Length: 379
Ligand SMILES: [Zn+2]
Image 1 (cartoon, rainbow, N blue to C red):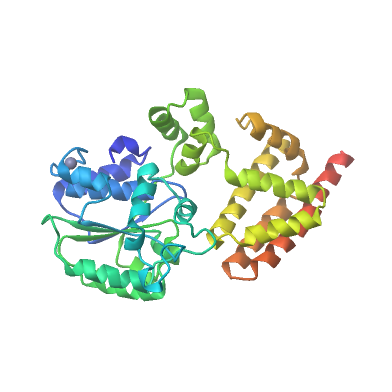
Image 2 (cartoon, rainbow, N blue to C red; image 1 turned 120 degrees about the horizontal axis):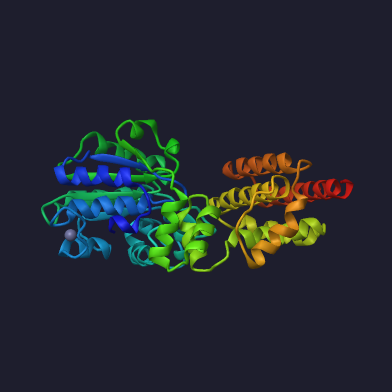
């Protein structure tokens, strides 16, 4: 991970470089990451610098080669998992059981998000978490000395997915730090962590990513022409993960989902909506929440396009959808949609029967989209 493989974040990179240079690293850190941002790549960057023979993440010394192949024996990754078709036993429900998947996923895209990860280990319909089995595995690792005699780094990705049992175990490690052992937590929702953990970590906030930095990154790494790079950067609102997907030419999967859902709501296709609700309810809670967030972004764009005449760059199918659909999102329904999705997220978070929640949401969507249509007809 070179500095150039992470767009923007100059301040954090500078702070991390200084830490590595002076070998003054807190024993517990938390990177408060943006959604779809550079949290994990920044953690890898710091790790690589600490272990690199020349302390500068040179990329070619044996330590860097191992770190970048995600096989350095002194770097341990902990991430949310669950049982799947291959890992069936509860006692195997820890990161080591998924190490090969993890290496593959990271090599393909270090900016991956939780949903990408769940898909790659085929637990999309379940919640991943960091639990009891993980703390046993971690205890075994910490009992060993560092292999290379230098730093030992434990990266905990989506640290807010740790359950109480793991949190209490790790708290002990944070309270009684071992020498040259760094706990590096990455989280997009640190408020979900125990306050006792928060009080023991030094927090580093990822900066908001500027469109210019992101488009330069897309041009350098994905051979995107300057105009499309700017367009993509504008659209993804800071999500590098989404930007990469767009640069690789795959349509935002949530947009496809949203389009077919809205089509059914528009034509009052109750049967279709019922089936859709069933399918949606089978996704993980994180996936369902992500759909709510994406749907709100799409609706917001439609609203802005219809009423404020903001140019939103896009082309092809996507442009056609926005052009056709945006008039139906207007003052008659935009607040209603916002409220509806907030409520839906709230229910999903609280484990209410998801199928019923989504069917109910779909019925509300019919009412809302037709309220928008009625307003168009009356103007
Ligand atoms: Zn190196």
